[in-house]
Length: 326
Image (cartoon, rainbow, N blue to C red; front, side, top):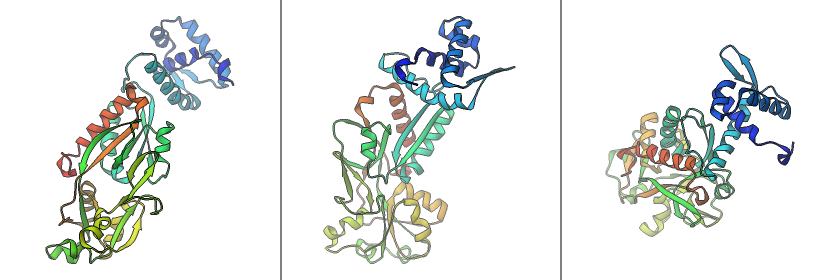
């Protein structure tokens, strides 16, 4: 099937029947006669080689192909309506999928609160998370394959919008009974222990002080600021004995040895709760960093994206002061 030979008006009929599950209700919504809606459905069934809807006692039941077809159709119609200055995004009725690039930090702290809100207010909106360990996350954003990226960014070009979700600082986490839990820790003492560092990429190639440059964006992908700054602060290197690709790799390792890891405070709270790890504050006073969301400025005024950004900000705010945010 070629798009130029396809009547796009059929998609608005399909969308109305799918949402209303009734030809009569769809015809009223579209200001068309029931026979016109039925005729449009017959044409669409022929074009797609599927029944799409099966009449039952309680309405029109969509076929599996219709359910699969509904999400991209609704998303395309919403985007077209937005471009033409049409109806605002209605999360309660929207059938839409959003893709977000994020690490397991965000998927542990911010995303669960986002999902909780979306499940309540936008039941037909789906969310897909793209892992932050991809080398091409910014390219994915540039090409429209993801809607938003969440992380710690040093520089962001003007072609992207950005908003601060929260501020974080770092703490150390160790096993219960670790030597550091029975003394007043100092930076020098902390440097005596082997460190486990999180490196989303699994490689230091191309990194600048723990940041990865990609298409003008500098995003942090190596997480152990204390170890990175040790040569400047102490005149010696910290021993990074192990690197892992995700934060949630840390607890099963730390619980079994005297290694130490630097993690965001909000994540440390989860490790304490689920694994019984112990928090050691950074004696040097960890600097606070902004966790941000960035997106393509071409989508700045898209009502659906405006809604998603507001939901992300609210989800981050729900973390409260325990996250280290303000």
